[in-house]
Length: 352
Image (cartoon, rainbow, N blue to C red; front, side):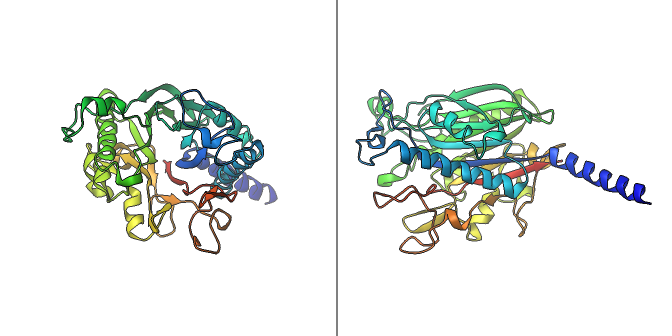
């Protein structure tokens, strides 16, 4: 009898282990100005130097890295496994990424890095971490922001203005998970600062969409995930019109994307606060194959039936004062406060 119970227990454990291996966390995190303490030639990173406006010392840099690693580790502890794919933004260079993946709290994840130096004048890029035993990298590409050809009217822009404009490239990564073909786009679309970007963010979304549709044609059945700090909500035109984001799975056609954070935004969830209002700019979308195809599919992970999660803990959140209830960030009102990020990370889970 004892032996029978032992065998049953082993079978349950084996089934559980197999299920976990076939369940993968895919997410995005804006790391809020993860700069090192050295000047990068041609980049406007002067405020993040020891003698700069932020007095960005090695001690502050080390604490920032420790904080970022703590969040990634906390997500691992909550999910019982590390993210298979984690897109990040607002990082200065490969050096800061290497320092992060080697932080003691997450070094056992053995994260590999995909990163390209981009043209952003402030010097921030996007990148992607992946677990090599779960994701097999095939190719990657840095897609530049271009104005033309576009369905958006940019006739008010001169050629000189277009040539002068610099923003983050879009990262494209293709590979396999569990033998299935996947493509990932990591974006940080143009800012809202100064009331700008009303046409630029739709253009960024259009670039991603056009590229993704060509990838779908080239690789029928490929699973596609678009993620990033879009500087727009899932309900904004950049996401609904130009990225064809649909709120409900039943409405997703082969030329659409499923936008799980749209319902969550309407329900009051926030990944950041802008001008005192809660928003979800940290968006993840999946294509038709990930909601209606065979094999790996996006799954419900929220207790209320949502397909996405905004990850937040009390220690990542201001508990008092003017900004109570908002993300506990690194700088507040120009002063160093030693927090985490002004964004919460978001993620989805795909499984069979």
